[in-house]
Image 1 (cartoon, helix red, strand yellow):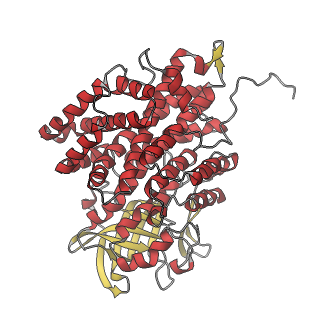
Image 2 (cartoon, one colour):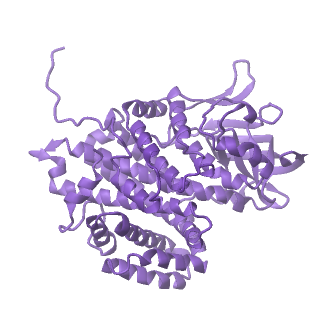
Image 3 (cartoon, one colour):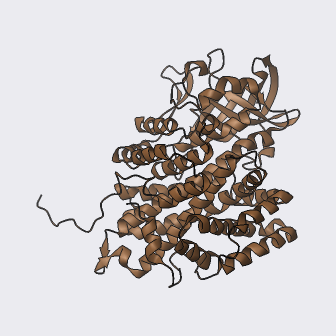
Length: 546
């Protein structure tokens, strides 16, 4: 065929670049929260994640999603999920980088912050493979409720080896864990669960039970074991449920089907039924919710980190496109309205990163009373606000690419995947209302209110709008008689803490623009409505991915 035209004015793909070295907001957040952290491994991970090879794995893992094989060719029940080889390549990189368990064995002075930075970077490439990574990371605190099981499984849950084979835990160099809490009738109201657990004896792992019932969302069913909730005579309890039993036989976990989801395509989310499945009690009988919430706290951190990473990737794609694409006689990035949009997105992205990494720091200092209070306070706040902003952010970033951003093809096709992924973190592990209620529970403790005041004290006098908000928060907290305004309170606590952090981690132009827009009201109802006095040049330059 004869050529009909020459292709030009189409941006080159954003690939073969270092996601860590080019992310100045993340690097500055690390300097503030973990000044002694050696970031060499993060730089190596950033280079791997920005490579064309890994971008191809991410695409293939989503295009060729998981496939359920409930029975073998002879009719025997097998309940296995088959993944594309690219899925396993991604899992190998994530586990090899310690994103699933390194904080529990790492002697680094800031293991949770280091792991948080790596998790954020990995989310830019492929977030849906991180579900089992996140749950394995989060399972350790809860699993310590059964010392015998933890003694056998703990070191292998922290191992950097990845082994997807279905076999006994003793024969595997590394292990992964999932969880199952929600049921059809209850959702977030897990007290409505009907799955039953009946005593079935005792052995080296403690009290054994037979579990009968179902789970409506059972993510990553190919993990080696799961923490599940079931009703006993004493109430809802937490159980350790392995796929392969100690005698080598398969446990009675029946995968009914895989969920057909909006996004998160590479990850297998399933519906399962238990038919007298064997499980072991973790913690005290009847105390299942507090026990498994230790796991939920860590996965909520990952929701905030994950959305921060998705924001960064969407922003990077928008900057890459607009710095090469011309319209109306000049580059899009030089158009005044586009500069306003890009700078506004950059502010949101940096503030999200600053808050998420700050939250990770709290888990590195469990013995510090202030940090423990901030962990209780900031976990629901960061989960609520960062994740709530994600979908709006992704839509605006996609608009910067125009129709190219809406197409599931090529380098810019990553944007469509980011957009489909964004709502998940807001829903998973408790939607907005659940987080707002958790915030109210945290604030009923006097140390949380005092910790918030201490956290904001470093920014006193830096901006009048921040001073006004910070001064009003204690009174609002004390006078809040109803939960009806809890979401607004969560928003304002998030904005105040983000502003205080940006004062300490970002250039003055970023801090001033954030406070002027988010706190002082010099802002519209959409991105791209910053005031004319904003330092657009420095904000955009700081955010560039190359």
